[in-house]
Image (cartoon, rainbow, N blue to C red; front, side, top):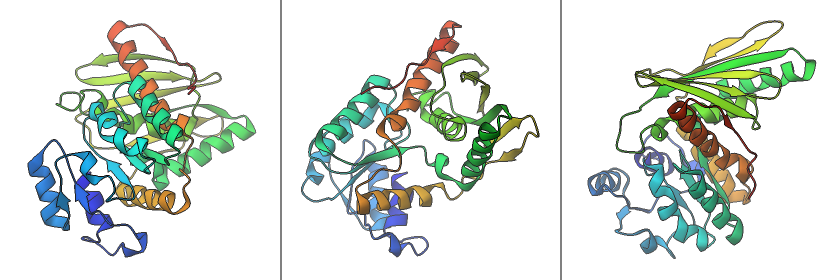
Length: 280
């Protein structure tokens, strides 16, 4: 994602100059990838995140492996520098909570996670769910999205945050428990809310996203087009930098990692997992 965000902010593809941000430096564990970003977008390559301190107003942590995000984000958050941390925020909830704690302690604005939660189709489904909740007709729902289980970036965690963050945006941030099963590289989970259930289908080898909201009146179903997700996320980051306010509570930002940890434990053990509320 370093390449696409750099192209958006530096207006290499399309005219996004109204965003009023510019990428000036890049660093990563894959030097060839960093050089590619530098060559395409006219930025400097540095060898350590600390080299950027004093030279940047904000940071984006976009490593594909969520297990590296705390390491990369820490020096910036400790310095009070606004940060974007890509999906997943971390592979382990304790590390996600530490990222949040560092941001809160220094007052650094923090956002990130999956860009898919920002796309219009997800917001429309969320509105349908909210209306069904208000009139008492909500029965449940379903969400599906791609999964890439075998990879060097954290296995299950590399891609699964997209689905969980879509589900939480549509159906609410307070599920109570989860059960899950893994078969042939795909994972099926049941996210249990106090008054309804939502089935989650992490589909190995799929390339499409979609959701259904089941109500007593109808079950609207539709694909989720994520083609504008990076631009929407870049705009949200620029808005946070301008206002100092993140677009979601910090607890909601890290809750997906808690749920992903519970889903993985549930399909590995075959036992339901309780989902405690996030308290920092």
